[in-house]
Image (cartoon, rainbow, N blue to C red; front, top):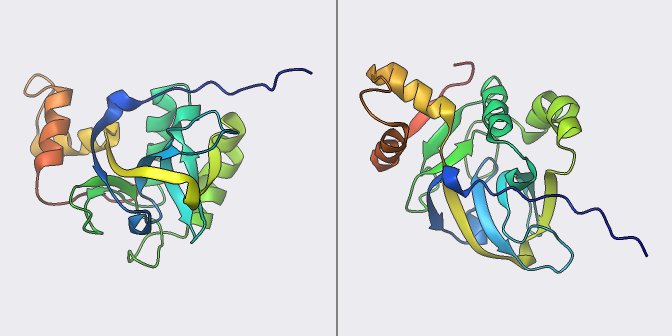
Length: 192
């Protein structure tokens, strides 16, 4: 019997600035999360996911661990930002700021419908190139769930623009650390 073709897993843990353990009921559309997935039939038992849709039983989104290069992830966020805001905030009061995309959800006001994002950003370009990164997970198999503060280049660029800080003034890693420690939310408005 031939072996199944397994997708290669690419961990992007170096881009995670911080995380906070949360309950499954605290997930909202647009939230960046990581978790342990209890299943013997999956390649990636520790996905890093941009949640696009969550129901009582399922969580669907983009698993970044199936994307081989960081440039493609950063470019995806630039494309997403053409349609909606990108935030580093704790708007659902989980206790720490996390990276999110402003998607419509019953708990968070505003944002675009996840279907609009899917049709305009993901469907024809991104998912054709990375066709195995869109995943659906059973919430009953999700354990040790964490909201993630993911280092985004567009967040750094916007902060440097607003503060007029140059690369020689503060390193990339120190800037991201400082961003995560600021009490207020940081929002990159759509189209920025």
